[in-house]
Amino acid sequence: MMMNFRFGTAINCIDGRTQEVVIDHMKQKYNIDGVDMVTFPGADGIFSSDDHSEAIAPIRRAVSISIEKHGSQIIAVVGHYDCAGNPGDREHHYIHLRRAMHEVSSWNLHTQVIGLYVNDKREIEEVK
Image (tube, rainbow, N blue to C red; front, side, top):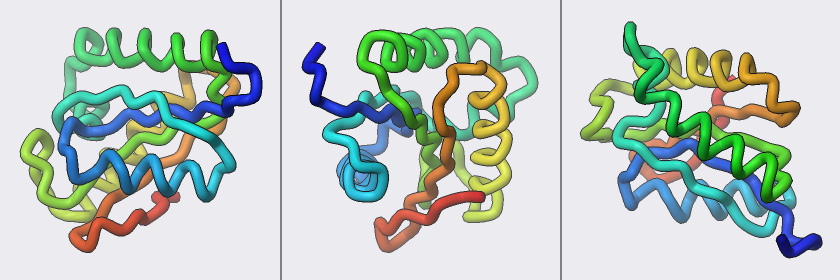
């Protein structure tokens, strides 16, 4: 591991419109050098399905590697406008992002967990 390279982690959709804006935002706002990207179609929605344990397991494993091996101190869960994997309006995604943030926080990885929504202008909205 490059000791002076500071990592963050993003649980993001596979949609290519979200990747760069999320990385750029996290690098600028959270003073990191790069982002380990854990991607899955409609990632924010996975945490809101009734039986999601099978889908969550590989995501949790990948996030754990990012934390343990790369020393990531921040995890972003990302949702976005016009998502094919988790269709819905802005409020739909905000609800799913809050649920996802709550679940990821419950993993007790001792990192900051944030929610990010990429809107129709490809701007980042931080979800509280």
